[in-house]
Image 1 (cartoon, helix red, strand yellow):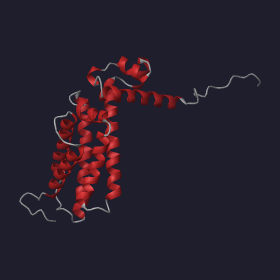
Image 2 (tube, rainbow, N blue to C red):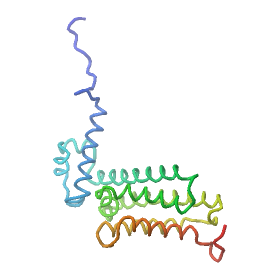
Image 3 (cartoon, rainbow, N blue to C red):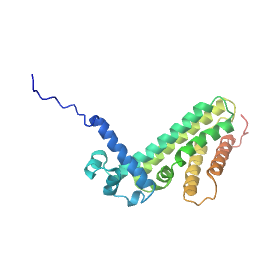
Image 4 (cartoon, one colour):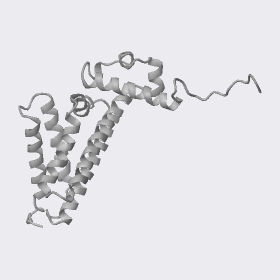
Length: 222
């Protein structure tokens, strides 16, 4: 019928409603990375300031997030996801070709490069998230558990290849993750006078020593 109105398609400026929603969310997260990861930091940022930095309204903010803590939580997961992707890709590339010391060094360097290339990622992951809330503590510990599982899986694979003695590596992995968090935090804060390469080398030596440690009262050889 001539002159009939078209049904709305949900598209505006060539983008669907879901695409526009994803774009708004990305803008808020980009703004959060700038404000939380640099200045003024998470605790001094307001919803109004974040919305202004994103070029959006506070109404649009509350359509995407319940509050600023949701933005911090999403950024923390984003940084960890990127680091995990970098580490697992490095492991996949080097699993069959390199002996254990070089393999561990390559994987840990991929992780460290991911979290330190952008200082804002480093600050969000190791500084801004600390002590925010019980919810954020649970999220941080949950991601730490994922890293522990990844380390334990690689240690078990190395033991199966006869590179190290087979044992329960969970305490070793947990101790290493704590060392990574502490040393990278202190390095980022300027409290450790070392280059990133020196920090990576030291932590790699620590992990290899932990992997090679014998069972309680046992022989370190496989």
